[in-house]
Length: 160
Length: 160
DNA sequence: TATGAAAACCTTTTGTA
DNA sequence: TACAAAAGGTTTTCATA
Image (tube, rainbow over the protein chains, first blue to last red):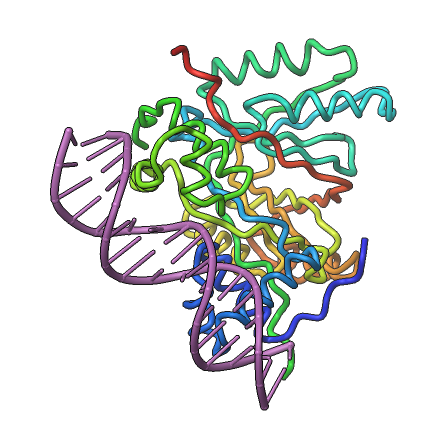
């Protein structure tokens, strides 16, 4: 895990704009931050090389893809050993219902964010893919009423 | 909440490709799915209008932005009434440390995904922004050891 | 609704400071 | 490292099927 890269105001402004719309053209970006388009290109390329920008992702609406119900599953895996959790993680990641998977501290080892077609589908998922597994000791299901994405996750404006 | 749109094989293939790299050109997209570039443009525009594609987001590495430690905070808000939770949600969303916020079923009302500079910063966040608030009855902190994103969240291949 | 071709536009390279 | 301008692509429009 490397140190965080030095980011100046231009970099931060570029990141801020691209977070709002990752397809903003270099031309518009340049106009907004006050440098040349080719300079923006350089900056973005550097941010990519430096690992600050991991990629460009499409944000999809699960509901429009036939999965309007979302939930978190807290999963205890016992025994919590590498030879069991490796396959567990890969199986969960491969489920079409899985959106994200987290390995956490605390009594529940894993948190799985899932999107399903409905409660029947959720029940099937929990029973067939989780509790039926020998290594899964416990599953706790919590439905998501509503969710929000948050700000651009940027460091507070640096002193000039 | 509207029904899910009818998606044919071309739409699904386009979504699959764009999830891998949301900047794939329409020309490459067209080549891959076997239609004209202008048709791809139409398809993507339709998917956007239909709300399937919500937007294009930059995936950033919090660690490279000076926030290498991530955690989930489970928060109980009491009393759980609209006039309290509206401001609570907005305050949490405005925190630079917040990545995502979920309103859940179960004893803990909210789950906050945060990224911080370190344990000291996390402690400060919990004490100053959460437990010090009158409406916050309880906060439980779980660190994230590791996280994975999952597949493209697409419906299983439709019968032809 | 899809296409091909043309026009408009954006990206990327290059030479220079 | 940043810039301006040109070259090279891509996107988008449009007439047609």
